Image (cartoon, rainbow, N blue to C red; front, side, top):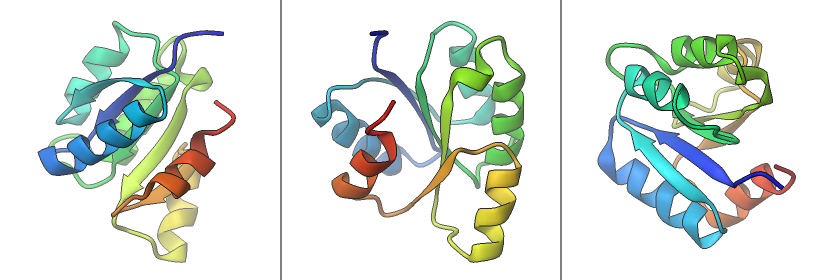
Amino acid sequence: MTERLALIVDDHPTNRLIAVALLRKLGWQTHEADSGAGALELAGRHAFRLVLLDISMPGLTGEETCKALREQVHGNALRIIAYTAHAFPEERTRFLAAGFDDILVKPINRERLEALIENI
């Protein structure tokens, strides 16, 4: 089995801290980025299996970052989860159409996160 390596992308440090703590308790190794550009740079150097990606960030949005991640060499093997406070049905449809695999609504909890990543 390949390494359980996750990337958490959020411009708010507290949101990254919570996700990192939960993922580490679930046996994942983590890297963090505070921007879409930072995420793309890290994804070019590491074989991530999971990306928790905030939607609303300065610079590249989560949707733009998701599209760019999918275009990278191993992008289609990634499980990219929108990590957002936006949970309206029309937004969910838009996020899935943009290339996200699923949506994790903030504030996150361990049970929901475990359910989303159990088969990765």
